[in-house]
Length: 168
Image 1 (cartoon, helix red, strand yellow):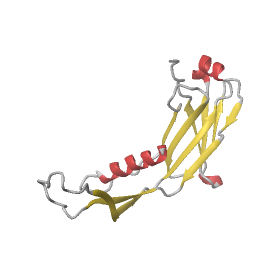
Image 2 (cartoon, helix red, strand yellow):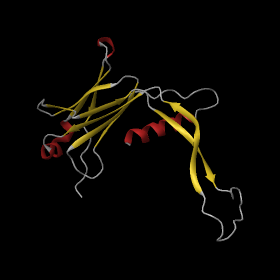
Image 3 (cartoon, helix red, strand yellow):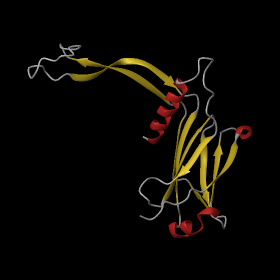
Image 4 (cartoon, helix red, strand yellow):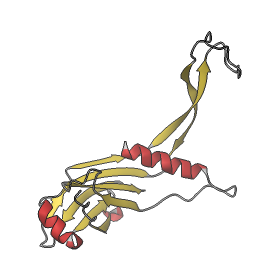
C-alpha cells in the first residue's frame, strides 16, 4: 500500500512536467522511518532508485548488524488510469426527477491510459534488536544499504537511523 501511494505520487509529479520536456527521473530517494503507532520494533525503508535494493541492515554502535527481515523490489511499477462513468438512463439530467429517479451506479470504464515508472521501488523492514537501547542511543546507530546486482554496479549507502517515536 505504501509503495502504491509512493508510485502514484511520483507518477502524478511526472505528469506535471513543463512543456519543454519530461521531468527528470528521481534518483537516490531513500527514507527510513518507524511505522505509525509509536512502537519501536522495526524500521521501515522506502527506496526509489535505478538499482534494486539488495541488502539493508541496522548497525549498532558496537558493530552488531541486524539484517532486514523483509525486502521487496518492484522492478517496473506502473499505474493504470480509468475514466468513471455513470450507469443510468438519466445520465446528464441535472435537474433530477425527484424521488422517482433510480440511484445511479458508478462503474469503472475501460482503461484510459497507463504510466510506467522508470525506476525500481524497494521496501524493507529491519527489526530493532533492543528497543530500550535503541531509544537511549539512536543517534549512534546507522543503516547500511546495498543497491545493484553486478559486481561493478553495486552501490553502498549509509543512512542515519531514524529518531524513535515519542512515547504517548
